Length: 257
Image (cartoon, rainbow, N blue to C red):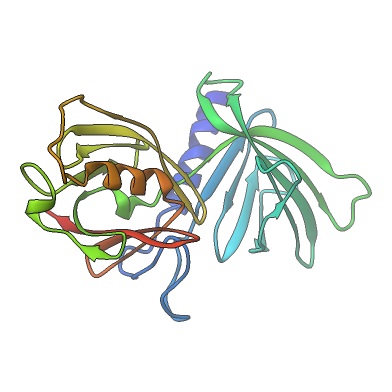
């Protein structure tokens, strides 16, 4: 019975985290005040008692099987970063309740399913009529932007348009699997692959591997892979993916079917 209740709660969170597919958004900032960001970018769950949290740009929703705390909706707030960059805290309240949500980048094992998640989550929540907060622990993960899940061909690199003559055979491309947080593709001379790290307003390409074919003089593959590894943010619009960091725009890709 406990497993059934846990599955039902998890399913509710997944449904609640669906994004507005008909809205044009970016991963770092919205292109206009009328456009919606992704509805939900983090979800967490815990057991005994069963509870769940989904954090979005519009609201933070807590659900549970705890009497009096079945569903509590808080206005969205920005995370408070601790001195340890791997820890984020959300302090939220409404007219009936308050909560502190702490997310730490730390492998976490679900106490029932055994599944491993990349973040541990702690929630302290209380109704305003209560003197003590209920303390809960669980696991969670960020919901990678589903729009990244595609094949992207390079158009610009470090501010300049690229041409086939800049590479050996064909234009560099990356295929991103957002459900598995991995990518693969062609760097302009060698096959490449690696992992992506995603959080709200953050995108990194890591553990980049490539085959060892010698590249001819003038091939810009090394510049391309360096741009990938230097990426921290992104935006998507008009069938283009733009990768950037605080220094500026690094690469622009066009989506291909």
